[in-house]
Length: 219
Image 1 (tube, rainbow, N blue to C red):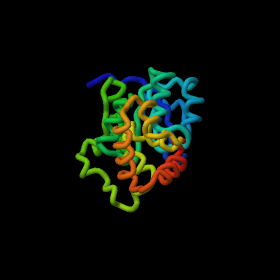
Image 2 (image 1 turned 90 degrees about the vertical axis):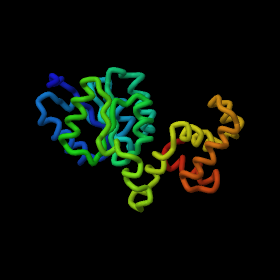
Image 3 (image 1 turned 45 degrees about the vertical axis):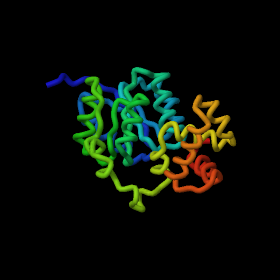
Protein backbone atom coordinates (compact mmCIF):
# COMPACT_ATOMS: atom_id res chain seq x y z
CA UNK A 1 0.00 0.00 0.00
CA UNK A 2 1.29 3.47 -0.89
CA UNK A 3 2.12 5.71 2.04
CA UNK A 4 -0.50 8.42 2.50
CA UNK A 5 0.80 11.95 2.01
CA UNK A 6 -0.34 14.80 4.25
CA UNK A 7 -2.26 17.11 1.93
CA UNK A 8 -3.46 20.69 2.24
CA UNK A 9 -6.53 21.31 0.08
CA UNK A 10 -8.13 24.52 -1.22
CA UNK A 11 -11.72 24.38 -2.53
CA UNK A 12 -12.97 26.84 -5.18
CA UNK A 13 -16.74 26.57 -5.69
CA UNK A 14 -19.47 29.21 -5.73
CA UNK A 15 -22.04 26.99 -3.97
CA UNK A 16 -21.57 27.27 -0.16
CA UNK A 17 -23.45 24.05 0.56
CA UNK A 18 -21.14 22.07 -1.73
CA UNK A 19 -18.05 23.72 -0.26
CA UNK A 20 -19.20 22.98 3.29
CA UNK A 21 -20.04 19.38 2.44
CA UNK A 22 -16.71 18.67 0.77
CA UNK A 23 -14.80 20.44 3.55
CA UNK A 24 -16.57 18.33 6.16
CA UNK A 25 -15.90 15.14 4.22
CA UNK A 26 -12.21 15.80 3.64
CA UNK A 27 -11.59 17.04 7.18
CA UNK A 28 -12.57 13.60 8.47
CA UNK A 29 -9.48 12.19 6.77
CA UNK A 30 -6.48 12.59 9.13
CA UNK A 31 -4.10 13.13 6.21
CA UNK A 32 -6.17 15.98 4.75
CA UNK A 33 -6.52 19.62 5.82
CA UNK A 34 -8.78 22.16 4.09
CA UNK A 35 -6.78 25.40 4.21
CA UNK A 36 -9.09 27.74 2.30
CA UNK A 37 -12.14 28.24 0.13
CA UNK A 38 -13.23 30.69 -2.56
CA UNK A 39 -16.49 31.41 -4.37
CA UNK A 40 -15.02 32.96 -7.53
CA UNK A 41 -11.91 32.94 -9.64
CA UNK A 42 -10.91 36.38 -8.38
CA UNK A 43 -11.29 35.36 -4.74
CA UNK A 44 -9.30 32.23 -5.43
CA UNK A 45 -6.36 34.16 -6.88
CA UNK A 46 -6.37 36.53 -3.88
CA UNK A 47 -6.28 33.73 -1.32
CA UNK A 48 -4.33 30.92 -2.92
CA UNK A 49 -0.78 32.20 -2.40
CA UNK A 50 -1.27 32.68 1.33
CA UNK A 51 -3.17 29.43 1.83
CA UNK A 52 -0.27 27.36 0.44
CA UNK A 53 -2.26 24.25 -0.52
CA UNK A 54 -0.92 21.17 -2.26
CA UNK A 55 -4.17 20.52 -4.12
CA UNK A 56 -6.79 22.86 -5.58
CA UNK A 57 -10.27 21.43 -6.11
CA UNK A 58 -11.54 23.73 -8.87
CA UNK A 59 -15.17 24.03 -9.93
CA UNK A 60 -15.39 24.76 -13.65
CA UNK A 61 -18.47 26.99 -13.49
CA UNK A 62 -17.67 29.95 -11.23
CA UNK A 63 -18.06 33.72 -11.53
CA UNK A 64 -15.00 35.57 -12.77
CA UNK A 65 -12.27 34.18 -14.94
CA UNK A 66 -12.77 31.38 -17.45
CA UNK A 67 -11.75 28.00 -16.01
CA UNK A 68 -8.87 27.73 -18.49
CA UNK A 69 -7.62 31.11 -17.26
CA UNK A 70 -7.87 29.90 -13.67
CA UNK A 71 -5.76 26.85 -14.46
CA UNK A 72 -3.22 28.97 -16.35
CA UNK A 73 -2.99 31.41 -13.41
CA UNK A 74 -2.31 28.56 -11.00
CA UNK A 75 0.38 27.03 -13.23
CA UNK A 76 2.11 30.41 -13.54
CA UNK A 77 1.84 31.80 -10.01
CA UNK A 78 1.63 28.74 -7.73
CA UNK A 79 3.02 25.93 -9.91
CA UNK A 80 3.41 23.52 -6.98
CA UNK A 81 -0.38 23.35 -6.57
CA UNK A 82 -2.00 20.36 -8.25
CA UNK A 83 -5.28 21.32 -9.93
CA UNK A 84 -8.19 18.91 -9.78
CA UNK A 85 -11.09 20.10 -11.93
CA UNK A 86 -14.56 19.03 -10.93
CA UNK A 87 -17.96 19.56 -12.47
CA UNK A 88 -21.33 17.99 -13.15
CA UNK A 89 -20.52 18.39 -16.85
CA UNK A 90 -18.07 16.09 -18.56
CA UNK A 91 -17.02 14.52 -21.80
CA UNK A 92 -13.84 12.75 -22.91
CA UNK A 93 -12.98 15.81 -25.03
CA UNK A 94 -13.32 18.19 -22.07
CA UNK A 95 -11.22 16.00 -19.81
CA UNK A 96 -8.44 15.70 -22.41
CA UNK A 97 -8.47 19.47 -22.82
CA UNK A 98 -8.23 20.08 -19.06
CA UNK A 99 -5.31 17.69 -18.66
CA UNK A 100 -3.58 19.26 -21.66
CA UNK A 101 -3.90 22.68 -20.00
CA UNK A 102 -2.29 21.42 -16.80
CA UNK A 103 -4.96 19.86 -14.59
CA UNK A 104 -3.86 16.75 -12.72
CA UNK A 105 -7.29 15.22 -12.78
CA UNK A 106 -11.03 15.48 -13.21
CA UNK A 107 -13.71 14.55 -10.69
CA UNK A 108 -17.40 14.40 -11.55
CA UNK A 109 -19.74 15.98 -9.00
CA UNK A 110 -21.62 12.68 -9.14
CA UNK A 111 -18.56 10.88 -7.71
CA UNK A 112 -18.87 9.12 -4.37
CA UNK A 113 -17.05 10.45 -1.29
CA UNK A 114 -14.79 7.39 -1.47
CA UNK A 115 -13.81 8.21 -5.04
CA UNK A 116 -13.00 11.82 -4.16
CA UNK A 117 -10.65 10.66 -1.41
CA UNK A 118 -9.13 8.06 -3.74
CA UNK A 119 -8.60 10.70 -6.42
CA UNK A 120 -6.72 13.08 -4.11
CA UNK A 121 -4.52 10.26 -2.87
CA UNK A 122 -3.72 9.22 -6.46
CA UNK A 123 -2.91 12.77 -7.54
CA UNK A 124 -0.62 13.27 -4.57
CA UNK A 125 1.19 10.10 -5.63
CA UNK A 126 1.91 11.75 -8.99
CA UNK A 127 -0.87 10.12 -11.00
CA UNK A 128 -3.39 11.70 -13.37
CA UNK A 129 -6.83 10.78 -12.07
CA UNK A 130 -10.00 10.86 -14.16
CA UNK A 131 -13.37 10.14 -12.56
CA UNK A 132 -14.74 6.74 -13.51
CA UNK A 133 -17.84 8.17 -15.17
CA UNK A 134 -15.74 10.38 -17.46
CA UNK A 135 -13.80 7.35 -18.70
CA UNK A 136 -16.96 6.22 -20.48
CA UNK A 137 -17.46 6.73 -24.18
CA UNK A 138 -19.18 9.93 -25.26
CA UNK A 139 -22.48 8.13 -25.76
CA UNK A 140 -22.45 7.14 -22.07
CA UNK A 141 -22.03 10.73 -20.88
CA UNK A 142 -25.08 12.86 -20.05
CA UNK A 143 -27.17 13.31 -23.17
CA UNK A 144 -26.85 16.94 -24.33
CA UNK A 145 -30.33 16.59 -25.78
CA UNK A 146 -31.85 16.47 -22.32
CA UNK A 147 -33.49 19.85 -21.62
CA UNK A 148 -32.03 20.06 -18.11
CA UNK A 149 -28.53 20.00 -19.58
CA UNK A 150 -29.16 22.53 -22.35
CA UNK A 151 -27.81 25.59 -20.57
CA UNK A 152 -25.22 28.08 -21.75
CA UNK A 153 -22.40 26.72 -19.64
CA UNK A 154 -22.79 23.27 -21.18
CA UNK A 155 -22.80 24.85 -24.63
CA UNK A 156 -19.62 26.68 -23.73
CA UNK A 157 -17.97 23.45 -22.62
CA UNK A 158 -18.72 22.08 -26.08
CA UNK A 159 -16.29 24.58 -27.59
CA UNK A 160 -12.62 23.76 -27.84
CA UNK A 161 -10.04 26.11 -26.36
CA UNK A 162 -9.23 27.45 -29.83
CA UNK A 163 -12.92 27.95 -30.63
CA UNK A 164 -13.34 29.95 -27.43
CA UNK A 165 -10.37 32.12 -28.43
CA UNK A 166 -11.91 32.73 -31.86
CA UNK A 167 -15.27 33.52 -30.28
CA UNK A 168 -13.70 36.15 -28.02
CA UNK A 169 -12.01 37.85 -30.99
CA UNK A 170 -15.22 37.74 -33.05
CA UNK A 171 -16.97 39.44 -30.16
CA UNK A 172 -14.33 42.15 -30.18
CA UNK A 173 -15.27 42.95 -33.77
CA UNK A 174 -12.16 41.57 -35.46
CA UNK A 175 -12.37 40.35 -39.04
CA UNK A 176 -11.43 36.79 -39.96
CA UNK A 177 -8.22 38.11 -41.50
CA UNK A 178 -7.27 39.95 -38.31
CA UNK A 179 -8.21 36.99 -36.10
CA UNK A 180 -5.98 34.76 -38.22
CA UNK A 181 -3.08 37.19 -37.79
CA UNK A 182 -3.65 37.37 -34.04
CA UNK A 183 -3.76 33.59 -33.56
CA UNK A 184 -1.20 32.77 -36.30
CA UNK A 185 -3.68 30.70 -38.27
CA UNK A 186 -5.09 31.12 -41.77
CA UNK A 187 -8.25 33.04 -42.64
CA UNK A 188 -9.73 29.77 -43.93
CA UNK A 189 -9.10 28.11 -40.56
CA UNK A 190 -10.79 31.02 -38.78
CA UNK A 191 -13.84 30.68 -41.02
CA UNK A 192 -13.96 26.95 -40.28
CA UNK A 193 -13.85 27.66 -36.56
CA UNK A 194 -16.62 30.25 -36.97
CA UNK A 195 -18.87 27.73 -38.74
CA UNK A 196 -18.18 25.11 -36.09
CA UNK A 197 -18.95 27.57 -33.29
CA UNK A 198 -22.26 28.55 -34.89
CA UNK A 199 -23.16 24.89 -35.34
CA UNK A 200 -22.25 23.87 -31.78
CA UNK A 201 -24.11 26.79 -30.23
CA UNK A 202 -27.03 26.43 -32.63
CA UNK A 203 -26.77 30.08 -33.69
CA UNK A 204 -27.19 31.71 -37.09
CA UNK A 205 -25.42 35.05 -36.77
CA UNK A 206 -22.43 36.86 -35.32
CA UNK A 207 -24.81 38.98 -33.25
CA UNK A 208 -25.89 35.87 -31.36
CA UNK A 209 -22.24 34.93 -30.86
CA UNK A 210 -21.45 38.33 -29.35
CA UNK A 211 -24.47 38.14 -27.02
CA UNK A 212 -23.43 34.65 -25.90
CA UNK A 213 -19.84 35.75 -25.23
CA UNK A 214 -20.97 38.74 -23.17
CA UNK A 215 -23.49 36.72 -21.15
CA UNK A 216 -20.85 34.10 -20.36
CA UNK A 217 -18.19 36.59 -19.33
CA UNK A 218 -15.84 35.82 -22.20
CA UNK A 219 -15.49 39.52 -23.10
